[in-house]
Image (spheres, rainbow, N blue to C red):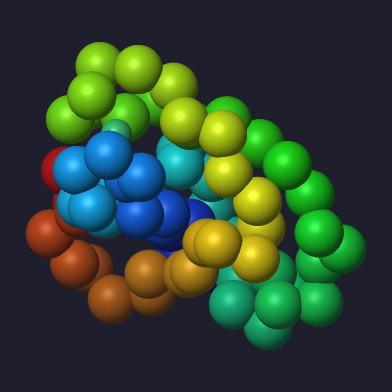
Length: 64
Ligand SMILES: [Zn+2]
């Protein structure tokens, strides 16, 4: 399992979506649409599954 990450469209920084998923199952998940809170913009961003990736390593963003 890892944290589902997206890139903030305004700041370009990587943020957590708050979702967790397994990389293999996530790659086979049908395209979906979701929203995630961005602490850099203090706003919610809309994103598609194809724009997201799984951060399985305990990276800084995932730990924040
Ligand atoms: Zn943002």
